[in-house]
Amino acid sequence: MTTETHIPETKNDRETQTKISGLAPADALFSLTIETLREILQSIGYRVETLTDGQITFLRSATNGLPFDIRPGNSFAGAPDRFADVAFLVLFAVQGTLPLDLVNDWNRSRRFGRLFLDTPAPGQTFLVFCQDLSVAGGITPVHLRSQIEIWDGLVQQFVPWLRAEVAKIAPSVDGVSASTQPRNEA
Image 1: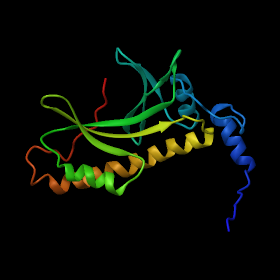
Image 2: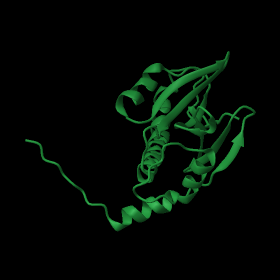
Image 3: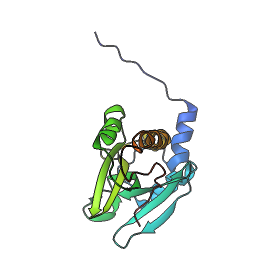
């Protein structure tokens, strides 16, 4: 026997949906533009700047003093300024080596945000922390906001976790700095 549970929508839910993006509750987001995403982030309290790295335009913001980028993903044919997904990401420069067990421990114990090492050039290694956000198929503005809140919460958990884990291994790993500062791509 299957039982359906209906949770009624409150007036506050409808007001939040409309406030976030100006859309009525029945409307859904099927694509994003850099400008729309910037407006949504600003409407929920983030400071956001639009940057270009010579190839793509992206957003930069911060949470609790930690800068992060929001980079567009897959664009639609015929509409290169509209995207089906974006990635929230923060980069940390790695000095020395970082054990893959540390990276895998985060990925095993957490959902939504993933961690990996990237070596774009010899002698240059970054610890990348990211979360993908997709609007493919359509999502409500409230869902979009909840995904942004998940990212914010993950970053709040990640920074103390990383400090504690690096401090544990710093004495045994040559060249790893417990005070590694975040670094964004420019």
